[in-house]
Amino acid sequence: MDLTLRQKAAALLEASGRFRKAGHAIDVFLISLIIINVIAIVLESVPTLAARYHTLFFFIEVISVAIFTIEYLLRLWCCVDKLEFKHTKGNNSAKRLRYVLSPLAIIDLLAILPTLLMVFFTFDLRFLRVFRLLRIFKLTRYSRAMQLLLAAFREESSSLLAAFFIMSLVLIVASCGIYLIEHDVQPDKFGSIPAAMWWAMATLTTVGYGDVVPITPLGRFFGGVITLLSMGMVAIPTGLLASSFADQLRKRRDAFNEAVLHSLSDGVVDEQEKEHLEALRIELGLSPVEANQAIKIMTSQRVHNLYCRHCGGKL
Image (cartoon, rainbow, N blue to C red; front, side, top):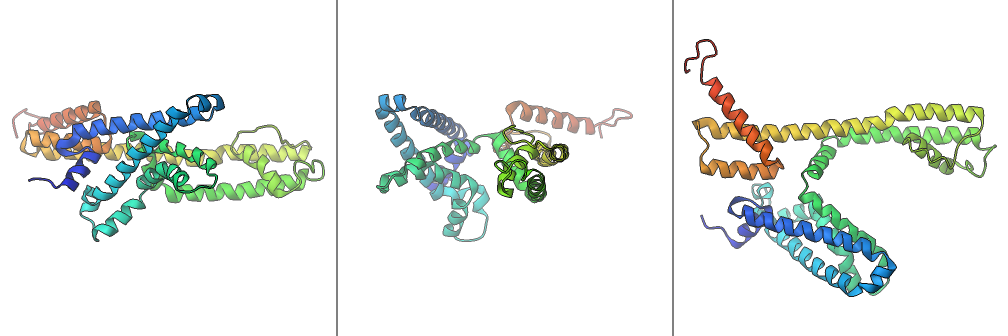
């Protein structure tokens, strides 16, 4: 079946189907461009380098923004043909609006917005130059680890909110407690509860800068209790994310294993099924080694199940 121009663009940007190799080449080019941009933005913050290579930095910025803008508009145009939007309800405008509000689309927009604002507005927008570093988050689209981390955040969002709510309560209690204890002795450092929050935050996160410390015996005892309490508090969100991260990786491997078993239903994996498995591997972010290992294990298990474990005869 012949694909329309929009479907071809969608397949190319998603590196799927027969456009997988070409799409992968585009991904490598965009990743390289993002890295060059980040390096250029960092070097441009050095006054001597900014003055010496002003023209080079300018051309890098203009060319990059042009390419990122074209990429954003193309993705916006062909997003209705992506698998996640293709079978959803609503017209094309509703699908495009849903895509615009998606995290990856917002990151793509923020990558080009500061420069576009500096072009169309005459007032001082130098502070927006720092926001150009948000382009590094475009690597999320191509990074398997970042995709797993974002999925872990979504999966554990309610639990993380509950953990941060508890930490906020402990922060307020610690700030109020140290304020009452140390206020009269160190009014310059613990003059108010908001000022005491700096010490509470540094203690709860186990950073302990040491610039603000209690000096009374009761204050030191209270600080020790808060320090011991913080060890368990910081471990809660870390444990949640680590567990969810591993769970997301397991789910992706299980999904690939199920696809392999489905392909082996007739006893052999043909060329079309191999292409489908390869596309699924890229979509799930699995490495070729992991995919080949999964195929070998699933194939050996299926062959093993075809024979009786007692007599060795074929079932």
